[in-house]
Length: 268
Image (cartoon, rainbow, N blue to C red):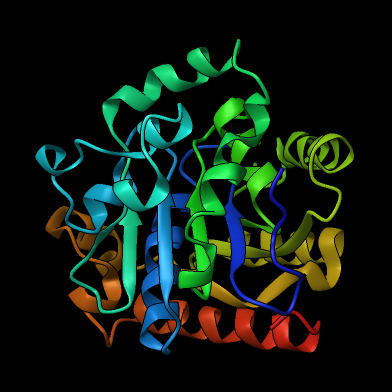
């Protein structure tokens, strides 16, 4: 099986994962990808969520996804065949299609079923600084493929009462994938999302998450911001929809923090 380039050389592959829906996972994937591209990183977003919201949020219509991540996973197409440019300079996407709903079932009987995405990624690794994988909101074979292909996991957590509920299950899955398929998998960081500065509960949740995860939690907090919510309906990342909004500025800060953290860790 083809191996990744050594750490510190070539592409960084980050899976954006949380099996709990509504935490800002896809929003974070879209806007972090755009922010990394804005600071001169070449980025590929892999939409591995059958809902296809990351593809829609970057303006890729349903009629423009004839070759998508489903075909990549089942071996019917290469990653580069499914990849297309977005309107954002230096940001490409491998979109999702509705047929991806059937991929998890088809993979069950496949040989080396956990490694299909990892194998596909070797085709295009050298072309990008970052690959971000938008995982589905579940812990199925699609997510396992993403975690097996990734070098690190980025976990969005919403600043709400049940934020930590279910995270232990995700951490257990990450540990299981680490032991069985990907021993170098690590948690790159945890990003707090949908923070409402008018709500004391948001601050309490942020404090609890930091107490639990320590320095794994990014300093940057993504605020609850109407411009972030509006942007997907226009098929745009918030950085393009409203560059000066609080949400756009937060994602730029997060991108900078991720790069700084990786350099401090000796990754880049």
